[in-house]
Length: 379
Image 1 (spheres, rainbow, N blue to C red):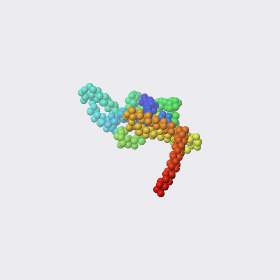
Image 2 (cartoon, one colour; image 1 turned 45 degrees about the vertical axis):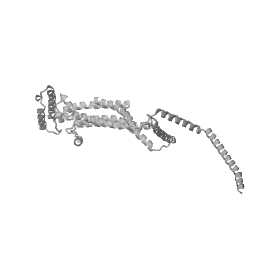
Image 3 (cartoon, rainbow, N blue to C red; image 1 turned 90 degrees about the vertical axis):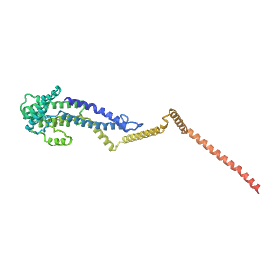
Image 4 (cartoon, one colour; image 1 turned 30 degrees about the vertical axis):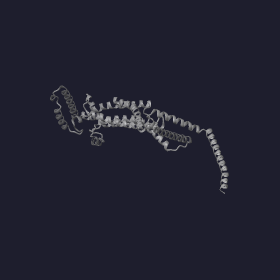
């Protein structure tokens, strides 16, 4: 239960924390310098955070399942200790034990540290041999794990099954109460009935596994496949049950967080795909798109201006002169675009054109008598 509690605490805090870090790094990589990053509360920011949150939860789910499998492999089992397969015969167990006991016997060690390690290894080998050579203990070990060595008053298969059921049922009762409390507090709203159904299904599977003299049938396919793909040692029934409990709990928590995110994404997709009949909604969407276009144009203009003033950035005086020139230019353009100034300029230009025409007509009048006199003098 302690590992499950730590897993629940990790699921409560880590995904949100890591999502914030991932989103910050993502914007730092994908958005160029000078571009405006999406602000918290905006549509793009919420969409990106939701997608990254889904990705982080999915990866953390895979990591949690891998971690549970790694813990099972690290703990090992008696068959791995002896280097044997689960379908081994008693004579092979005795032969293997004699060989390993000869290698790890404490009398062959000279230093105190190595002697202590050899004694611990020898005791573990002897316990593995005694457990696997006893039919009742071997049956119980394969289904309940090494904890059966502490069940002192069990001698038959029936005794071990009854003791095992007494330890298994309270675990599921506590799990169901834990889910009911979390559902009441509002943590497990979506898919609550599937959670209860999955828990009861796992309980049924476990009771079936611990009461049958054979391994679950699917282990004949899963164990060879795992060994072929990842060189994974064969999983015993108690190891499968440990993984099943961890995976079920992890899936409960993960789907509890993924459910609202996926439903929100599906709702937004339907809204984007289906045209709205409300003209106000369509108008707001068009205004939002226009606002995004304006923001993009403003960002592009800022980038172009930044590139234009880059040659002047090295000198403070040049940058000051440039700012002054731009300011004066803006003032002149503002003055020239004023309606009164435009009207005055048009009036002045009209007067100038009229005066120019009068001057040209006066010059033409003076040139006519001169031409007549010149013709008379020639005649």
